[in-house]
Image 1 (cartoon, rainbow, N blue to C red):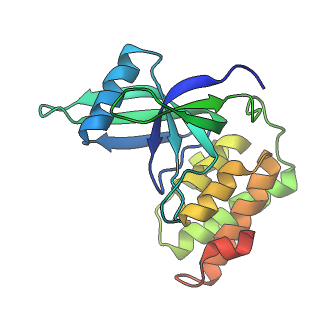
Image 2 (cartoon, helix red, strand yellow):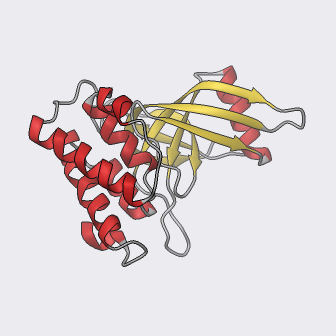
Length: 207
């Protein structure tokens, strides 16, 4: 493991960020306003991670670093920001930072997200076919021509991020090591939700 990286930590349930995907956020809490201001003055990045559902809640061990690619400061001090996912990380430990927001030491070498192996033509077709069925089941207006032009990673990660899966399912997608494994899982989850809308907890399919 390389030297740990210290980074601002933004725990937010249901807000999953994947590499090369965008995540818009509205920042209104005072501590997170300070976080955005410090990030803008520093490296310009924030670590997104989900809290667990236990009591007391802790943190999942895997998140994704988001680069600040858009910032709108509102008149009352709130922010609208846009994050671009850069790389997944594994949480090492939270740090006693002295800031109003949480910080942590993370391992940026836990995942190798540069240039993932492409999907097979069969697997790519499976993802696109199930995405169409899933979109139709939700009555979504989708530009399928534009979807077809996405590369494999952007396609799979975009579905994983925006699809209405529960937090546990999204976390499983984030932690899946390979793009091919994530593609298989996202197809399973779309099929499950399409065939059993509002049914059982989707995390039961990934135990």
